[in-house]
Amino acid sequence: MFSFIKKLFGPATDYNALLEKGAVIIDVRTAGEYANGHIKGSKNIPLDMINTRVSDLKKAGKPVITVCRSGARSGMAKGILASGGIEVYNGGAWNSLMQKIN
Image (tube, rainbow, N blue to C red; front, side, top):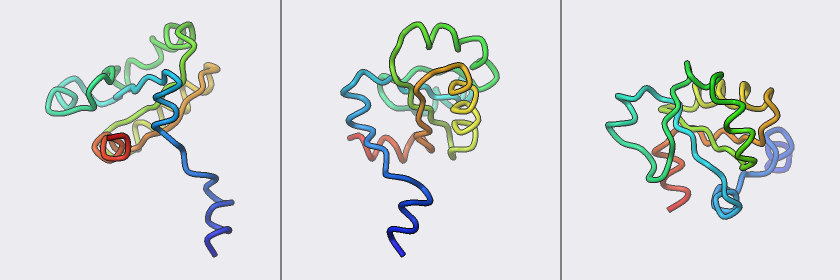
């Protein structure tokens, strides 16, 4: 059963290893949501602005981890960034990822 689930979802992402490689955490929530709590060192680029930042993020040449409140908006942001040729991972809910990397 476990191997079936692992094949279905793939291996777990090692976010700490990505951060050691220089990955950038992009929080795609609104500025107000971000102000109420976020991962230290993350950058706030609201989902409705992510299209305007694809080229800047691609030029940086670093992996990107997207986060939001629940994982839905970060999933959408992942799709936008991936289509721009960026190595990107959906970190899901910001507070959940914060617990995984600390």
